[in-house]
Length: 633
Image (tube, rainbow, N blue to C red; front, side):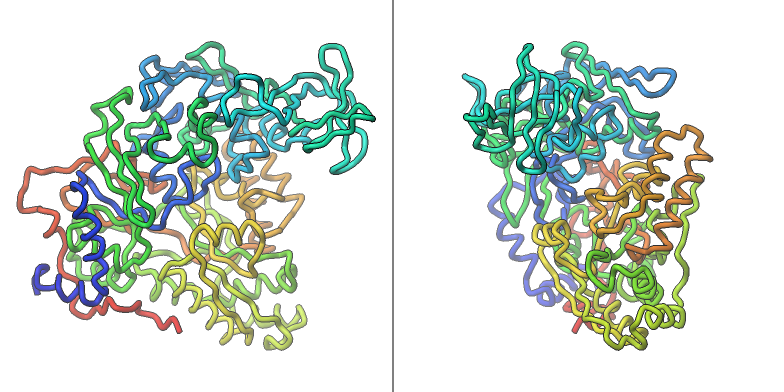
């Protein structure tokens, strides 16, 4: 059956979903390139987001000191046209290009990076990824606020009132001095600071105590001048690292370490500075408009320093979550790139080879796993956690719920990092799982409380949760239910520990075991399990200062062994990409980080036979797209 013959059947099965999108689209001139960006993004404020959909947008409208080669992932010059590294590999000096500009035509300077980093580390920003900057000297202490200072430190006192003449959303007036002592405890702490030769007392909050000579202040924290970043001039930045960090140049490409236009943020405030008409960016693209639950349209930034690199004039990023709708958008020529598709369709396309020019799943550095809330009983017992992990049949999951050739995961660190072999917790072993559960006081599941599995709304996550629920019931005799939440609510539930078991995934930010292992340190912003182990923390810290790769990786091995023995997380499978591309797309390279800068992509219009509406074979005749292939009752 031809592709065109299948279209009306496909649309009927999908409840005319793609037609609805077409109605929206007809009101707009078509973009040069359209891709499905999955869920509605949480924000364009890169300091507070954590998701891949956000990164796909932010990473293309902003540019850091470095960028990554789309094929090799080698760090390349971004806003910095060159850099020098000291012999001890702890001092980096970046030379900024003078033709780098914001999308409003203003120059990008060293001050924009310092302003951005200070805001990122500010404890009041509450950036979950603040730890990505802790490689800089004293960055961690700054981000800890009052908890990061002690008598004798140079400190800054931010007052509640803004300086005279400041923009509406500027920071409060900042005083600089030396901390003499801290009186009291907790919320009643009084910070005694010597400023210009005089001792002054401050308490955080709106009210001080005039009778006691205590002034109110927004916060007292380490002086930012103590953090290892300096603007030597408008176009030179010096960074001092705590220890040699082999992936530092890669990390500077990451969306959490981008520059920010101070005037724009202080004029409009958060979150209004991110709205169309307000936002100013410095990447190869800029925001044209955003329609909630529809799309973000990007257009070329005419002020970008390398205007010829971006070959697409307009790009649409569609907010579509259902996999079936994603695939239909692709099959009907309304999307040039989709990142996911129904497992049953995926398996049949791979098996038949009908879409070999558009679909080529490759492993990348990502792990799909479950978080266990160790703050709740009985998940605080390592025997229970291990029993849950050993009772899961991962082969059934990868055989029926995924479909792209994913491999069962038995470690947090994925396969594929050069010279590193992950530590595994063991294969499925139902008898051992039953023994451990009985030893923990729950023979055959008797007396075990009902568990709830939380996941963000997505067909595959639902299918996997239902499979695991049934496996636990069959193998351990315990009962579990499932709960799905949209992306924003799901992230809030994770952060506030409002779950028993929760779906999670981690994609490497750089090609190093540390990218996965560092998230599990005590109180890590992305630990989200409540688990803590002092020896694990020590090993991860020791690895940061070890320059010999073999010794460094050995430290990681010991740390991961502890993690896999105590199992606060349950690895499920390692990711492979499910990117499906129009045959005419060029400049898209499959790589271990699954990162694809839009500025590298272009459309080859040389062959009219490869028109978007005929870029895929018809769906296999034995595929019913109205439902997934696994019972999700």
